Length: 132
Image (cartoon, rainbow, N blue to C red):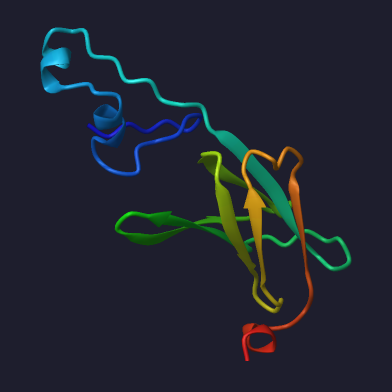
């Protein structure tokens, strides 16, 4: 079983929550099995130009170190430059922000210490201007 819900931490692997909580198939057959999904933390923000104009379609990625490797997840900013990551567990996250014609930004945040919306101001440039 793999549990997902937009307001709670979801399984990152089939059966992880079930196994962690010691729930077995017999519990479900007996109608006594219960798996509790922990509440996650919201991470929201906006991507703006250096002058404060919103950037629509910017890419915000976050990186997750898992026991079998690193995964990367992505969201895009809306017309107002806003974004919302799926709920996050209480860990540090490396965020990278990319937009066409702007130099990228990378930072590490501590979830849940991020209570206020994140704000990224991108300078004009290219990937080459940062990673050369």
